[in-house]
Image (cartoon, rainbow, N blue to C red; front, side):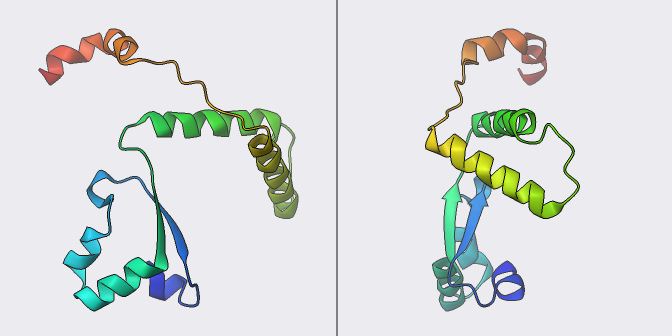
Length: 120
């Protein structure tokens, strides 16, 4: 398992979960005996993504912004890339930048109208 094979010495492992079927530690108790499931759950710091796809679109938007603002030049050295991205993240977070999501359910229905008959 991830916890013991790759991070046996870590006290906490930050895990971002985006699978709707695993938005809790309950599957650990299905897969492992209670004591083992509890041990694994205690080592995990779970951050749940929203159960809707908007978070994914926002992540793609942020990656696009980062590409334009931070990675617009060729960087051949991994350390230099990490430095650029770290500095960019720090500055972006300091400014409290947010994604202004404007795509509504109504917009979705119009854009995906051709799929409605397939779904129904």
